[in-house]
Image 1 (cartoon, rainbow, N blue to C red):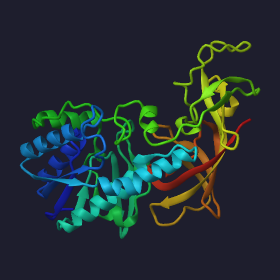
Image 2 (cartoon, one colour):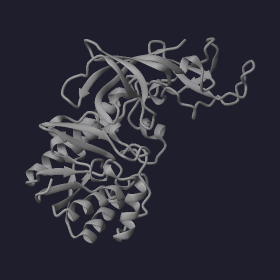
Image 3 (tube, one colour):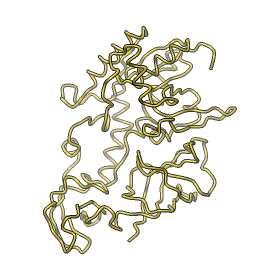
Image 4 (tube, one colour):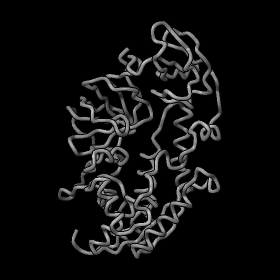
Length: 365
């Protein structure tokens, strides 16, 4: 990409997008910054950082000498991402809103807006890479294995990848911080954001309480003994250890083992918990997934691949089998807390192939 292009960069207020904009400007491109406001229900809340983030993004634009526009996508976000998020939680599943946000907002609503501004490409601060092979585009992992974000981008299409750049995908985070410090960016040492964008750092159950109805029921162990009461199945996720309120319960021989959420019985409104991180109920050898999206536009052929069933997980070897509704995976080694609603993302080496939403898992016991 040698010729000068108009590139619209999503400036979040963070260091990754700031350095992305600087790198593109260094390459001679016309760079325009866009700050996306995707949530406005908590503008005055201590948990909503959007106002601070915009000030940081504007300060970065000032240092870089580029224009910045504040764009409100809150209505689209509520319709396309948050409504689906609540539907999934109400159904007892655990969705990943960051995956949906990328597919529906950052690479759809934002991309459309950028094209209206006459942009040839958009860019974000994600740690991933795009490789063009003729007319075809591949999504690759970011070179920093600790920061790779291809998992969250696996629903992108050929049309979206054709217009997308990930400038920091070729760098390690330490290098990004070093560049930001060297060029005097005001947010060079800003802490990385954590948590779901619209929830921020607030307690998760407190947030869900505002939108989902509590329906208490029994919390039982593998033998059917009631150990306590849950506040509603929607408020728990598989593998959850904190917030169960049964830390003091002792059962034969395992009194020092922590308790984990292992199963949700939606019909009976029962939460099943087990002791020990490696309890068989928490391990799955296989899963099925639906609602698929493939980078190449079609599913890969059946065979041996690698998969992640959650972000920051090491790639797990598995056998991939396409099905009428999606696909099935059988793992070489049992996977921990495979959770319906989360994404199962497929890889062939450094190439992200796409994936689907986990519909069910097959526990080892």
